[in-house]
Amino acid sequence: MTRGEMALLIQRAYKLKVDGVELSFKDVSPRYEEAVKALVKNKATRGKSST
Image (tube, rainbow, N blue to C red; front, side, top):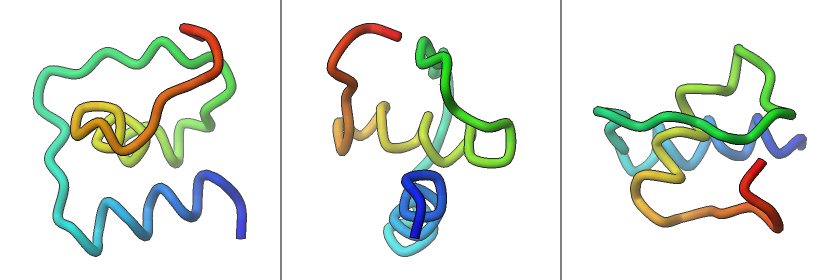
């Protein structure tokens, strides 16, 4: 399972919303962008650096 797939799983399982989040990570595939934004907004993830 990839990081992106895990992000999708968590977002869907917890029905996390994405409202008003800008993603600063540079390595997120467009397919997973919404899920990663939801995790960032809900403080479920963060990066080692801002990008």
